[in-house]
Amino acid sequence: MPNFKIEHKISKATRGRLFFSEDFTGYASQDAIRQSLSRLEKDGVLTRLAQGIYLKPQIDDLLGVIYPKIEDVAKQIAKRDKARIAPTGVYALYTLGLTTQIPLKITYLTDGSQRDIKIGKSVIKFKKTVPRTFAIKDELLQLIVQACKEIGQKNITETFIKQLQPKVQQLHKNIVAKELKFAPVWIQKLIQELYNDSNYVD
Image (spheres, rainbow, N blue to C red):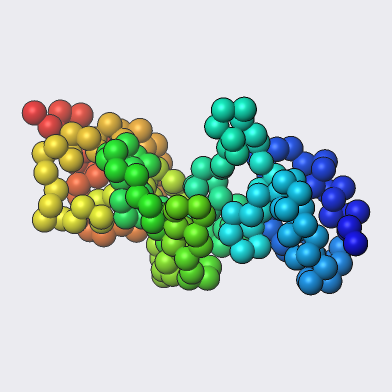
């Protein structure tokens, strides 16, 4: 039997909106919620992205379902879980524009639950980290630090420095003064040199 409260909430939402099964807690029992969402998926009202995660899809005449960006899904999951996340690995490099390689497994550091969530052909990996990681609150600085960690101190090249410097120059001086100290010492030195010297690279 249809749950009209669930259907009404979904019908009022804009296309492209993500829904979690937890969004309907209190509307019905967990089994009834699952059955309602499953029926709406079969009817084409919702698209199931992963267990308990649904999309009210935007439909393009040529492309079909327009899926949200993986980073938007990750942020919504973190918001639901009241967790903090930070891109890491190759995805940090990609987000900064330092590589054109699009990773199929996108890794985020988190202070929430550690798990993998498959979205289509991609996988969002939430990797548990220590609270100190989130002492750096500025998103750009966090990305720069994670990108440097991914490359590694011994593999820093002049090419990487030339690519990184414009990003470092975008940092606000207050962020550099207050938050850079939470990065590894070698990264602190590299960023400080790139930030202070606009002619660091020949």
